[in-house]
Image (cartoon, rainbow, N blue to C red; front, side, top):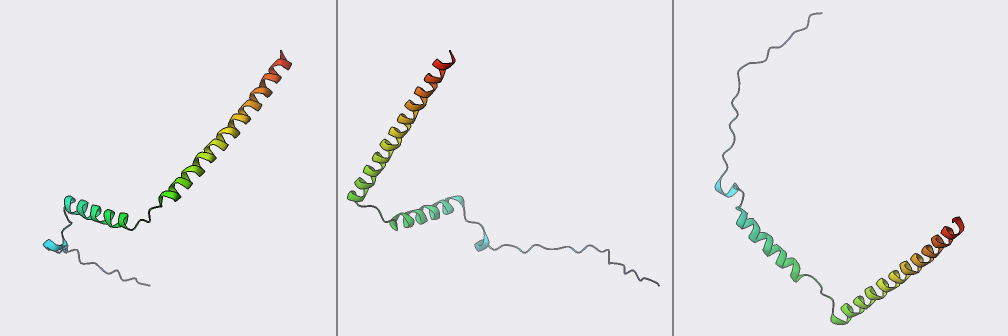
Length: 92
């Protein structure tokens, strides 16, 4: 069984990178920033802003929820503080 080994051509093949045209160049930072701002303004124009009554209603809901959660935490803290104080009096 004789295996034939093929010898590869050892000549180096120079690869030439294709030249980029001016239109293939990356835009400058200022052009990219300008495009970003134009896109941002376009997105802001598409936003559906809430009306004043909706904003007031949502604000009221947030205030009520904050007060309820604060009250809950205050009551829980008072109960736990009383419980710890009671346990300390039992121990000493």
